[in-house]
Each structure stands twice: as structure tokens, then as C-alpha cells.
Length: 93
Image 1 (cartoon, rainbow, N blue to C red):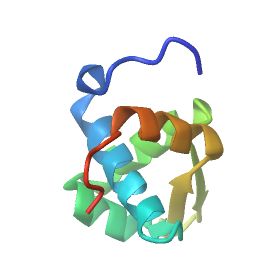
Image 2: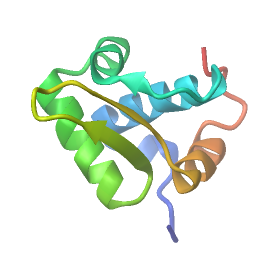
Image 3: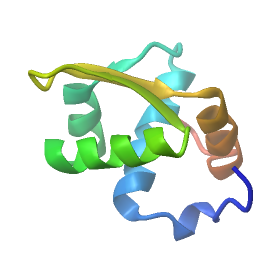
Image 4: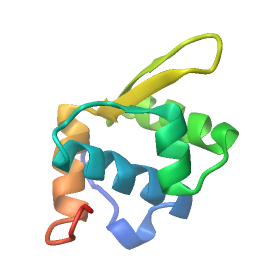
């Protein structure tokens, strides 16, 4: 990505989702389930899925979403770089 917006310019839902994915990466990098991401970010599942789809299109997130609604997501290398910049110095926990 070029011309990244500042963290405070991100949509609050996207920022909440990215913050939790960053937290997951800092806690060992294992993908988090969609249910856990929804609970931790405070987002409804439909909002979470829209956010994940957008972030996946931008190349910031990778997700494995099944037809029954279960799945998991994690930051891509580009997503990790962005979050490192956006959340630098922030405690991921």
C-alpha cells in the first residue's frame, strides 16, 4: 500500500478489527476464529465479515471463511507492516 492513512483516520470498525488482528499476531501469530475476532473487537458478525472482505481486497488480511460462517483470519505481511506503523508503541494486549 502507498499513502497509508493515519490510524485515527481509519473507520472505527476497521480500526477495531485491525487492532485485534494485531493483538493476535503479537500473541504468537496464530489465526483467530471469526467468533473470537467478533467478540474481541465488539463487532457484529456481518460487520466483521464486511471488514475482513475489504481488508482482504486491500491485501492486508488473509481469511479462511467457510460456507457455514465459521472461519479464521490473520494479518498478511503487508497488514503486519501497516499495523506496525499504525500501532507502533501501542500495547497489543
